[in-house]
Amino acid sequence: MKIPVINTPDFLTLADITREEMESLFELSAKLKRGVQKGKFPALLKNRTLAMIFEKNSTRTRVSFETGMIQLGGHALFLSSSEIQLGRGETVADTARVLSRYNDGIMIRTFAHSKVEELAKWAEIPVINGLSDSFHPCQALADYFTIWERESDISKVKLAYIGDGNNVSNSLLIGAALLGVDIAIASPKGFEPEMAVVEKAYKMASKTSSHITITNDINKAVDGADYLYTDVWVSMGQEKETAKKKKVFAKYKITDELIARTGRNTKVLHCLPAHRGEEITDSVMDGSHSIVFDQAENRMHCQKAVMCALMGR
Ligand code: CP
Ligand code: NVA
Image (cartoon, rainbow, N blue to C red; front, side):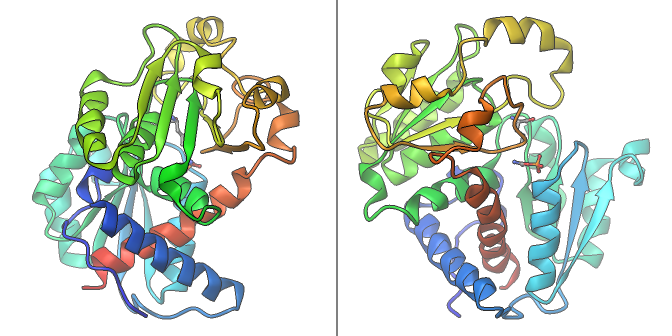
């Protein structure tokens, strides 16, 4: 099986890879997915190990990395920060150097993105960002793969994201700019994606003709959208803001009426976990437009491709 060459030691944001590299990861993800469907599991990472540090909860990321690693002939270690010495004050730099002596890769889910960067700076092995407060590149990679496998030309797609300008929308923006996807993000005033990320995306988009719209107007965002996307109003670590956000975000939700307003046979994405009844209704989650469980499955296929590219060298 041909393993894509990606010219980055780590996978911290989607800006670490090129459009061609992203498409080659999609090709490998598709092959690995077909393999799983046929019961074939090429041992591309035999005897390799991935240390997974979690400072926040997870279902999909933890299980898809761990299962993916086993399918590739390797092994993943679940390291909860409350149980390892990092949680008692051992430095990120020391942790990085120690884990590098035992393992072939590190995946980290944490708060500040600077911690992911610090880990990558000191690690002698590839570091994968499994979600920080600013980015969720593994998620966006799987999201665009989920669209790519349904489309003959992904650059003709319009994606509309309704909700918080958070880690997920930041990564979707970078991914859209890379792939030439048109993206519209509708968030309440004061909750738009980070300006630095928007500027970076605009710069990248000038090379791919991706059209980027940042707005507070949901109707403007969804007009003509082929795919609608949403995420929770309150991300992990923002729990204190729950009451305020529930009021501000009340209208920023995907409903059957909103799907009808796109004027298309729109598909609906959500990174999950969903807060049913808040950013998405039960009827949409469980309805015919929803592709959220295909999307969740694709996390594993895409992360297997990333691990092969980074750790199979
Ligand atoms: N989408 C996602 O990253 O899910 P988990 O928080 O369950 O890992
Ligand atoms: N924005 C969400 C994504 C969860 C996968 C969070 O950070 O909690």
